[in-house]
Length: 105
Image 1 (cartoon, rainbow, N blue to C red):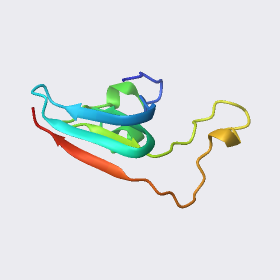
Image 2: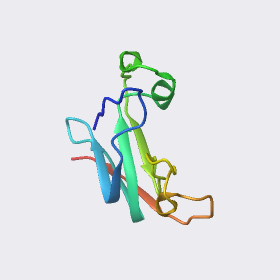
Image 3: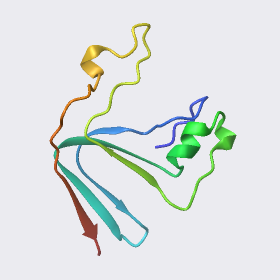
């Protein structure tokens, strides 16, 4: 999912998912499900590292995965008008059920 942006930042967002499995080489891991469609991303860098790095050479993989599980994510913009209203996630109460299941082959 890596995207070598000029300035390091979050990347690899996958949208409209019903479930996702994160497993190791032996097939052991976790399955995540939501009662509504959700977004996720996974990176071999910490959130702090992605936030503080100004250049890609400053990214340092760590012994783990940063897994972001999001009910809703605002668009990033890229127009002179910022993010279009249709793609903004506004602060409000949300109800969302998450199920996390162990995977043991």
